[in-house]
Length: 421
Image 1 (cartoon, one colour):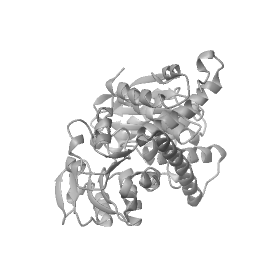
Image 2 (cartoon, helix red, strand yellow):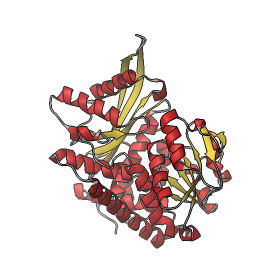
Image 3 (cartoon, rainbow, N blue to C red):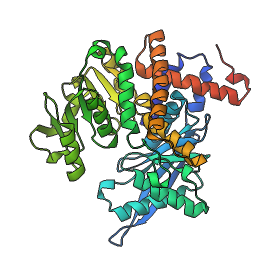
Image 4 (cartoon, rainbow, N blue to C red):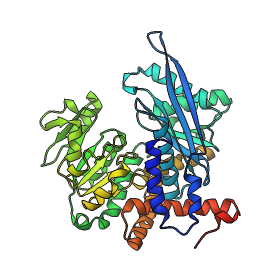
């Protein structure tokens, strides 16, 4: 077992003490049900061949077919993929979706690939994993450095291999290929919905009309979070992409930043504001720090240098478990990833449903489904946090485990699965 998965399991173990189920049920979540290790031989544009390591993990399917994104990044490992699949299992259980958790990844620097090379890798991934995925078994989606285009290539390749049109095999597709309105913005918008709902739990922050926000990551999720927050009257004081941090204590112009990022590909091209290295955003003076980039960015080296009152985990696993207690002791509340970024999988479920029956929901219907589902989950997390006087992360994991264990018990009648309550 890798260190990331081991650390994530420690959080699960802590939350298990708060639910009325046999502790032995923890063994059902100790390891993934299956992990596929792949080699993707790919012809590059210069004629050379390269082989890329890749994985797909189906962690647990108690509640339904597994669901989870596929990321292209040069730091991807089997340990990371399995850990993220566990988080997806908890996330789907928390928001009461009929999905289990999965994750996939290719170890490749996507920024160094041409469009043609990226397409070859995407299609090769499906060719190698075709028996592992399917609309009633495992449904992939976009993740880091993948999006609508990659899903379009993948669903097309799956159709070629299976000799049938199955748009419900992938979510996050273009609208023209059965995608859903609202899917692109869902993760960022959902993160802001979660923040709004949980503000009352964050002390006097909940009384502020204009929160000062610092955001690490200005990709899809980060930008849509900021767009929703600014529209609600909050202030962006710092933002970073992979190259630079841009900041202004009097507030940044979101439209200007977004335009430059779209046209130039980097915030480094923005003029008129103070700039610094990309990591500076983590210690920016703000009310709420939004982590919308990669995992493990808050660790023992910087956790005691934070200048925020609360953190929104829009990325998966951005805080290492080892510093959980330190953040609590320092009065920094965390809105955990399994709630804060659940908007993506909620709207993916809406897309999956639409693809299965061949109907198209309006954007307003998708938004209503997103809001209702997130607010229901948020209320349950708040209730459990208050009941046990615990942090929001532990409350969210306990709430997810309660639903997941109920499913495990319902699947079997063995004595070991009888509730202790």
